[in-house]
Structure formats: C-alpha cells, structure tokens
Length: 268
Ligand code: BTN
Image 1 (cartoon, rainbow, N blue to C red):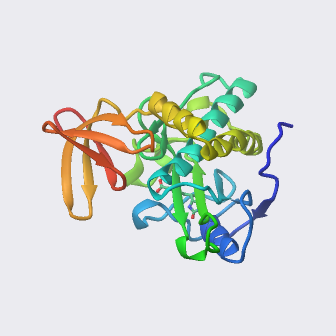
Image 2 (cartoon, rainbow, N blue to C red):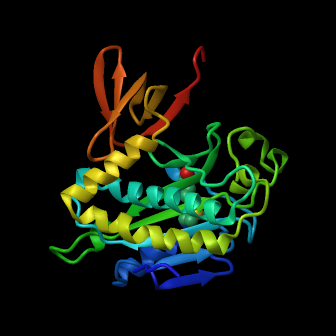
C-alpha cells in the first residue's frame, strides 16, 4: 500500500456531513490530516449553500482537515490540492483496474473545483470551509476540504434528478463497469500526501497552479461570472499562481476569486 500521512481515517455509515464533523473536530483541536469518510450523508453540503445528494454506499464522500500556512489570497490552493489529488487518484485506479474505455483517464477541472468528464459532465465537487476564528494565535486556521466523487452513481443518466441529467456523470459510466470505491479512496489518500505537502513551499504552490492550468477545462471558454453584486461575461484567459481565474470582459481583465463561474455555450 502506498505511503500516506492521512492515516487517521474515521468512517461513518451515516452522518449529516463529513465537513460539519471535521469543522467541529478542528474547533476541538484535531490536527491536520484527519479524514472523515461516509457511506451516506443526510445533510451533505455543496457550494453556494446547495445540498450534495448521493445514495448510500455508491459514491466517495470524504473530507480532510488541513491547517495550511497560507496567506488569505492563497487559500484557494488548498482546494486545488485536493482536486488535483482526486484527478491523480482517478487516473491511477482506472489504470490499475484497466476498466474498459477508461484506462488512465485524466479527468479535467472546471474552475474553481469541479472534476469533469471529457464531455464536460460533472464527476465530483469540492467544498472548502475555513474556520478562521478557531485557530490559536499565530497558528494556521483549519480548512476542511470535502469532496464528493460520483463513483458508481448514477449508473445511467435516468438515475439523476431531471435537473442534473446531461450535467453530471459517474466514473462507472465512463468505465463501463463498477469502480472500486476502496481502491479509489486508497489512491486518493496516497495522492493527498504530496499535493498537500506542496502547499508549504513557493515551488510546490507554483507546481499546483501549473497542474491546475494544465487540467483546467475553463481556459479559453466563454464564462459568466455570478457575483453577489451582479454578473459579467467574458473569456477565461488564465489561472494565476494563487489559483484565481482571470477573465477578459470586453478588454478589461478581471480576476475572479470567488463566485460561481458558469460555462456558456457558444450562442447561448
Ligand atoms: C459542490 O457543490 O460541487 C461541492 C460538493 C461537495 C460535497 C462533499 S461530499 C463530502 C463533503 N461533506 C459535505 O457535506 N460536502 C462535501
């Protein structure tokens, strides 16, 4: 089994949310590296206040507690580290399993943090939640990064709620066969080690940003950016060294730190 420092893995048959659990653990002083994995979540959290739903026992639902020593503007890279570890893990497991049609598949990242299939359907989402108030003075604040990977659900597009049909997919659909959740978890924990270690050095962070750029399916596309105070559209031009998205909006370059980026199809 590959080496990993993410060895404190706490498993739950059912829990409200693995992110909620680790935020509470962080407030109680839990160290970096604790992982929570659930077969089912009754109140899974998604980005922008949405929920994250998956049937019991089908997908990989996990959170990891990090305490990265990052400037506020660099915190997005903690999310990037987990997303890239998941990309690495999918590639490894598919290559090992030799699943038909998906061997060695390197999935893309839709900025800021969705893993996407080659046709753009969402395979996984990442939600980072920081508790800035709970850190002891002079110590890095805890950041809980949760990821939900569609491993074996949906088995077919019709399994999805109507609103998600054509927009989400599973590794099983890409592979054409069931995918081993435990093997994917092992590969993800192994990949997290180097990805999280990279957060600690300038060279490591710049490597994370480079890998995000290389896998980012958003670059070159037309996007609409929805911010609390309004929307704007433009072409996604670049990813900064801190992992932020640079959008060309009618000749004005705008850097997007947060916000919901919607990929706009040509003509839409
Ligand atoms: C998104 O909206 O794309 C992010 C979804 C994140 C879901 C994961 S599942 C494990 C962890 N626990 C949660 O409550 N949410 C995250």
